[in-house]
Every structure is written in C-alpha cells, then in structure tokens.
Image (cartoon, rainbow, N blue to C red; front, side, top):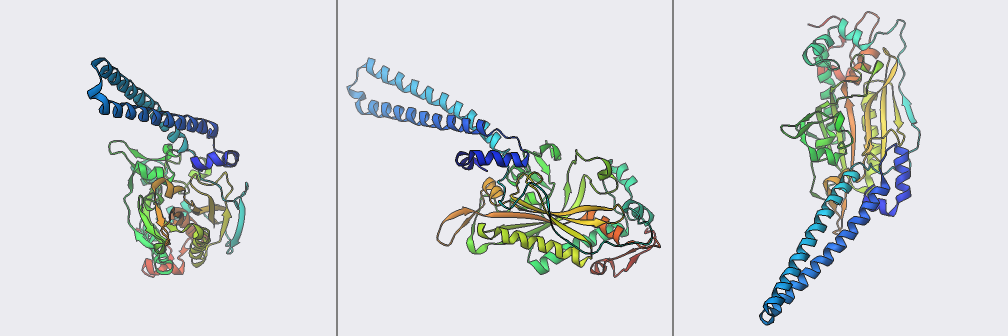
Length: 422
C-alpha cells in the first residue's frame, strides 16, 4: 500500500485500513504529496531560471557594464536563496510524508475475510481417565522447569528449562531444523540477535511495534522479536536472478518481546513470555509463485505436528488480526490438554512485495525486466507452546511423560520421563 497505490486507489486504501483497524490519514498523505510535487516543480523552475542567468552572465559578461553585472549577480543570488528555501520546505514535507507512509500496512489479499476461518482440524485430542495437569505443575513435579529461579534471575515471564526439560527443548529445536533441512531443502542461517533499525523498518516491525521491542540506545540496535527480521534482510539492496528463486532459509534464534498487553491466563506458566526459542522459515519467491509457496509452507509445518502426533488446527486470519506486513496469514494452533486451550505455535504469512520494496530486494527476469520479489515467513515452530502441548498431552496417570518417537533419538533414546530430573 505505497504512495502510488494511494494515488490510484484512495477509497480502496481507506477500506483496507478500516478492515485492518489501522488509523492512517490517507487524505493528509495525498495532500502532502500534492504539495511535494508542486514544490518539486517550483524548485526545478527556479533552478532553470538560475541556470539561464548564469549562462547569460558567462556569455555576455565582457559586454556588460558594472551596474548590469551587479544586477545579474544579485538576480542569481536571489534565485539561489529561493531554491534553498524551497528545498528546505520540500525536505520537511518529504520527512513528514515518509513518517506517515511507514505506518501504511500491506494490502489485503482478495481471499482474506473479515472473520477468522478454520481451514482444517486434524488429530485426536487425548482423553484421560484422570484430571490432566498443567505444564507448570508437570514441569515442577518432574524438575523440567524452574520458574522461581528464572524470576530470581530476570523477573517474571521468563523461562528456565532444567535437566531433561532443557534437553527436550533442545531436542525440539534440532528435530525441526533437521526436518526442514532434510525434507524441504531450507538453508540454515545462524544470524545476529541484535539488528540495525533499518532491518526492522524493512521487515515491518518498526515503527508500529517500537514499544514491544527491546532497544539498546548506546549501540542503536534492537533485539530481534523473531528471526524473520534478519532473514528478510539477507538480500537487501540486491538483485537476484530469476532462476535463483525460490530461496528457502531457516534460522533458530531466541526471540525477545515485551508482550506489554498480555494479562490473565496468558501469563501463567510459559504461554506468553519475554524470551522464547523459535525456528523461523523465510522464502524469497517470484510474485506468481508466492501463494503456491504459502500453501506449501503451511503443509511443511503441519507435517511436523502430524509426526509428533499432536492435534492441530489451521486458521486463516481475519484482516484485522493479520500482522502489519502481511497480505494473507494462516495460524496453526495445537491443543494442550492440561490447560484445555488451543495455543498458536506457528504464524505463516505472505508479505508479497511489502518487505522487498522497503529493503530493495529485486529479481531480474530472463528478459531483463526488474521487479520486486515476494517474501514469505512462518514459524517452524515456536517451542515453549510446543513444549506445553507435548508435556500436557503425553502425560501419564503415574505422573510420567511419554516422549514422542520422533524425538527419542535426540534424547538418548529415552522413552519416558518418569522421575524428577537432577
């Protein structure tokens, strides 16, 4: 939803902003754009007049008397002053416009509705002949979590995995990385956790989510809320070749979020925390292939949940619930029996050319044409909630936890966690 789109589709842009629940003054942007274009025209005319005066002076200065020379010099000086004044006014307007344009979200894909749609639900929700415990109860009983120590170290809403709990978390990370690398050909990246401001601007995290970020003013760097930020900037200001696409990248990172608006049950246990682990998937595609790749990414993530035998559902988000940079988003939830809730473990989005336009990532077609590529991102997966689903759904009557078969090779072939780990 850039300036060109606003000029050509003013009412459509307003409708999309309303559907998203975003408050951006389209009329103000277009008014500033009119002033900007008028000032550019005025500046160019003044520059042309100054050039004509200079050319006339250089051509006839030997034939002019002192009074005429002084007059031409004064005329040139006055024109230079006017050019500078117009340029200063233009600079202020362009800055104001840029600030407003940064709050314009992506366009909405035609298939996105104004209500959430459940696309599918798969897997059986386990039934117990006993009252299932929550993950924080199981974690404490088996020595997998120590939330008192994490609070002592960092304050509330941080996680301290312990002993077999830490090993289970690491098993999930390695399993997901190995699976996406072996079966879906993702290239693994290990990126910096601190990124420059421009990376967040191009990813669409800034300026809108600034209050949710952890910022280090001394260095001018932000802690990443997701590996999406570094991954979508891997090819900033580059031109890719058509036959290079699609490109698949993945990264395991810690993620840092203030989560300032969370409350109630969301902050109990490890459902919503300030730091968590995640494997992020990012695809660079040709525009015509991006929605095929979106559906493919959804299936890639669902396959892991089927392997882990966890009940899950796929939702298509409403326009209002989508991320700022997304044109279409699917969320994938798993069911956790202990707390009796569906928990989001993945959000998968097609951002189309939104991020590519912001960081100037283009593709050169075989015929020589240049255009912006499409960029997609998705969680593959987010681990605290996956951890919750596993310990709650695989709990046994005797207080032990069965380990999903796919994870056992990562846990020294352990089949069950049945006593407090030390």
